[in-house]
Image (cartoon, rainbow, N blue to C red; front, side, top):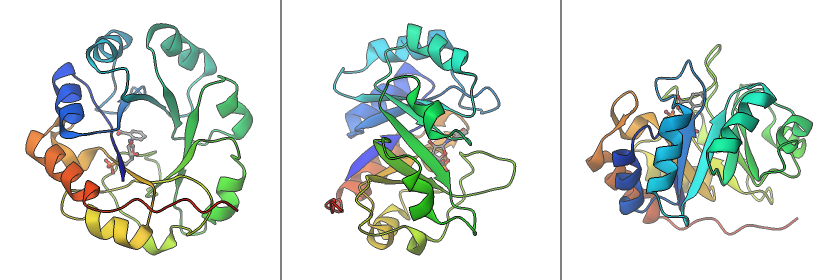
Length: 211
Ligand SMILES: O=C(O)c1ccccc1N[C@@H]1O[C@H](COP(=O)(O)O)[C@@H](O)[C@H]1O
């Protein structure tokens, strides 16, 4: 089971997450978020972590110039688009990307993910009107499509306490967490980060079925 710890705002939290076993770290470039990082913070964090950790930049309906500006200064390995971006928008940066889909009750995730055939993964998050993500809300994990042939990253309100059950129900390839491992917005809690990764790793990742 792969684990991404999102909303890293300091070198200290980056090192904590990597030492606890995180596969990927998320840096939020979305000013309204309490986890937003400046270019300087992001570049410092990037310098502090192993090149073998996937450094992910999260954007929400950002102007392409903003994304290009970050890419010019921060060596991101992966882009995460968490707004209403379409596939042509996502692929214009010529970088690997994952696309977040927010699980509105009327959303058909199989249809929605088909619109992003080149996405490296599809992140499924809870839907809350007016808030693009990082809500701490869960959604009905039974709605996660099985055997989609896609790398599914489960997100939304995951915690050390619920992640094992979430994995057993949703059977994703990876999990992503932000608020559930914080002590305050933007600050990670060491014990919760370790407990989350331990609980997730105790579960096997679902093998990918190629369609
Ligand atoms: O973390 C944020 O502040 C954020 C802001 C805007 C869009 C997405 C954001 N975070 C992502 O939201 C999900 C769920 O977060 P949580 O675990 O429920 O707090 C996760 O993918 C974060 O990467």
